[in-house]
Length: 637
Image (cartoon, rainbow, N blue to C red; front, side, top):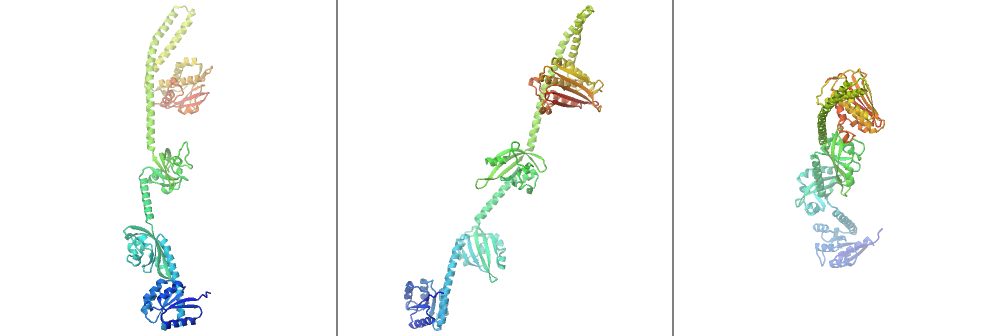
């Protein structure tokens, strides 16, 4: 318990009143110390040197009168409670001094010691409470002033009773808002007034908080976007107002608008591009966004691709693209931080192949780290198809050109063969004639006759070969007639018999003499068989075996008797496995330019195909090759 005495300063010029007051205080006990002065100046001097807890003041003094007395004292001692003691019961004066800061107004003739003591105690406690509240208000105001927003309190009728930092938000001072020279609702932008009012009725119904965003017109006419945090206040269940803080969010709003415009611009650019565009996350290669062209190209809905890995959508595969077959430009961009491009084969949802020209570019965050990649795919399927058609046309043109050149060579060779045959025929006729004339003149037993008969036999053989060469060299149309397939085989072997003998190639024939006739062009068949025999000879020569080799030629009837089968089988070098699928292609050859241009087997294939037949081949490298020709017995052109 605090037993410290209360120090009282009595400023009273009437000794009688001073003595009476002193007696009242003395009767109250020892807990008071009273100091008496008879003038204002003396009182002020006392306050400057002595600590005082409360002042009892008479307004009428020798050196000061009325309200001036109180005002002069209050200015000098605002922290000390003052009780005015007057001989006049003047209500106007009492209200005036209390409003000016006095703790009480007592009429001297109506005061007893109990009333005086109670007034002193109450005055001291009220002053402490006032000072504490004042300090609290100052701290609250200081705190509010440091908040980057306008702090306010409004009454139940929405009139403002407290506001701080209003100028920073709306340009109007606290006084202009408190005096209601300008009302807050009046500066809200007309487009936002309904929205600002919306929801405020909830604050009057229950204790709650809301946040509203709207724009205002500040004092200089500029639009300011604000964020208004409102909390309703209730006392004993009755709505007593709203506390709130308003923040200027114009910069955030402008930034949001800039981002929105930028996003909208980027979206419009993406949607205006005809190429398929996707935004891919570099961390897991998932798709963050696509344009409409992407969805149209690949046949997906947006929800089917967002979050999926890019290779799952464009390549229809479960693993990322890897070199050398699929060089990924996206990974190249991540590695080099630069634009990259490549041609890929993509597939749409239905599995249709799409030739694509892919380009990628990095998207970096504020630190310069690549976080996404812009992936652009241009459909070049039509271009690729056109390029392929052009390549095919060029190839066909080249083949035709080579065939024309070869045809010209063959025509020249035909003319040459016809001329040579004619030139050889005259001396051959002379040789044969002279041999026959000698035979007629010599004796039957003359040993020379055998030699002459050999000369005549070889001359006849030579004549037959010359006639055949002249026939083969003659240009003729494709003439179909019924023939024995064994005949063009025999003719071909006769033409090449000497070459085969010289190269030590033994021919084993097994020609079925009971084969049915077939429809065909004998000249073209002979060309087929000459090519096959020549190829067999070259294959055997390539082995360079001193024993030479064998050529088996066989004809037979198929089991169903619908086809004739012709076999040419050699013991030559064979054909490498990787070349078997190409041997019938025009101009494909493994020989040197002097050995041929690769048209032989393509001509064989085409002639047999024209006769509705087929050619099959089996070969083992180092052991030999077998060509099997199948021809229908009932074919008619």
